[in-house]
Image (cartoon, rainbow, N blue to C red; front, side):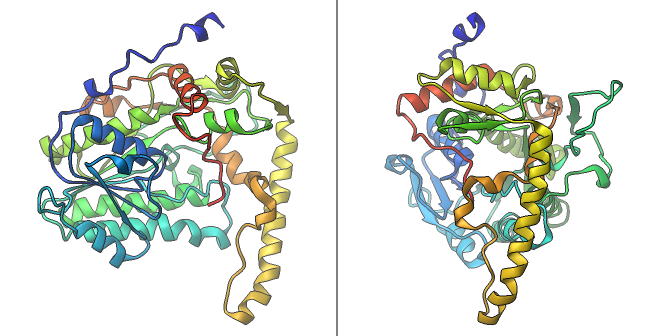
Length: 407
């Protein structure tokens, strides 16, 4: 407990980790979302004066800043994306030349074929539209936010004594296709990555891919914020451990990639880089203990057996499959399709095998290549980010929300 009490983040200065302002035009696709919001805040801190957010909903608070504008954009529509990206900034008379593409639908709970289109439409078609529009802009570059899940192997639920864990993943690994996660979210992100790589290799567009992992944490994330704000939290994942990245470090990595694309495009364009935070891996139990230590209210955890939850997850998946296909026969009569998720089910829909595939993993992300080539230097360890997140939420600086929502 003394170690937790001595944790401080006040000395961290993110401006020491990123290049100075360029005064180019920036478009942050998904800038109203979790990571996108912090990228916009970091650009403001750097002194950038032409920042455009492209999203379906406007962000909170940031639009009050004179350097930030918002254009309502549906990334599944090429016309909508093209209109938002070709619009010139009043301050420069030119459209954005740097495009940070953070937008995604993170339907981490799905793996069945009938759910595929919901992830494909946003994550793949949306990325294709952004690349198509970016190629029409003069000297544009696209930096795509992917996920460490695209290169992480499947979890191994039955361990034997000689198994090595946590597993270390790095950029130079070439995992066989058959052991990569095949759930909807990482599959769709891998396809989007291929579009980004191809645009660099075959069409001359400067592009880059960042793979944060294992989880991006910070105020309003899915891990820390849900633990702090949900009235009761069922837990069955205590022993699993991983490295995680603070949302501020993830934002800084994008600015560093932009800088590298200007300085050494031949070395970094079309490349993918894993990034994570500072310090060792933490178990989920240690993360929740730290949140409980900093919380001012009593947190209630309901401990459940992992095997039971694994079995219930398969039962939930089977139920949803049967429900969808039963309703489909009636919906087609009226030319519609049933909803993938019934509203009455609420957050219980997350209890599916795909969720466990992403949650119950022991993984260390090795970001040494990003540190060497991009100059990436994470400033936050997990303890600092947890304390910061709890402080921000409890002080009212951010809304007491979390990312565990059905999209």
